[in-house]
Length: 226
Image 1 (cartoon, helix red, strand yellow):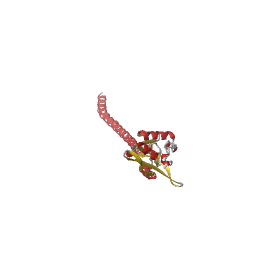
Image 2 (cartoon, rainbow, N blue to C red):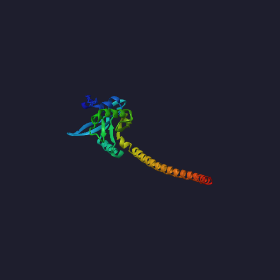
Image 3 (tube, rainbow, N blue to C red):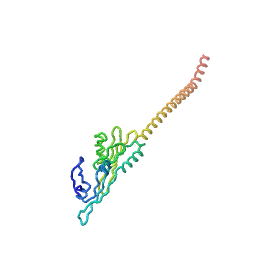
Image 4 (tube, one colour):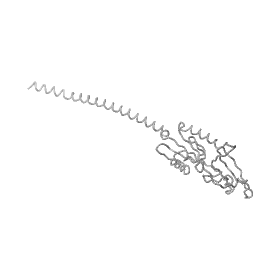
């Protein structure tokens, strides 16, 4: 029973017995950060726990909880990643503190995102995770979608990274088609312009000749009379 009161902090500042102490102290449901649990010697499983205090006559008497095997979420994340942008989207499920719960492209779980990618980019994604919204850098568009767990008043989030080339693929294709159309239209207009110019020159030449011919005839007659 002493395990329920262990207050030793791990590297993330979380007590060893947080699953019990959180519910006992707050008298509210608590959602644990992802952790590795040794089911059998040498067999570790990535888990999270949702614990709820049992209160009788306003007196705490224990907790009821459920452990969730996080590889279930990993399968969902992989499926989601494959369904977005031809499988080019990187999807990461982050816990309240920004630890990786599941990820389509990163192998380290229950660890900070900065251990899998550039720390600067990781800090930007974690900031999105906490504040919501989206951002864009030179290569990617990144969106954070909040996932609320109302019972525990906690919030996880999905961080989705999409290459700009893939995200704007349809727009780029449309722009290329418009450029081709503009080039083609420009060529057509040039040809039409040349045809109209030639026609105009021929027409003017004919009109000028029709005007000059009678004048020359009159001039010839005058010279003949002279």
